Image (cartoon, rainbow, N blue to C red):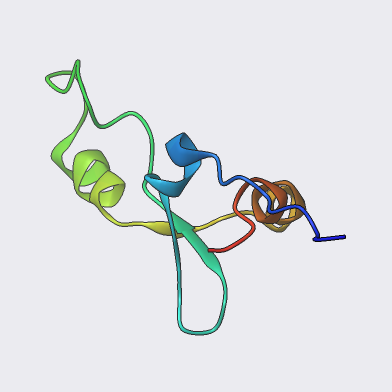
Length: 67
């Protein structure tokens, strides 16, 4: 009997990437609107992507089985 394939959550696949070392990378939140009250320094920091926190990695790997 053939083993079932796992489905990738497409919404998550669009938001996460894997680095060369296998870590998950995501973009930061709070950069889409109401930018006038945020400082330039803060907005500049939000441009950079970050590594997903270790507490969430297990869940993300389950959602993204082939990533």
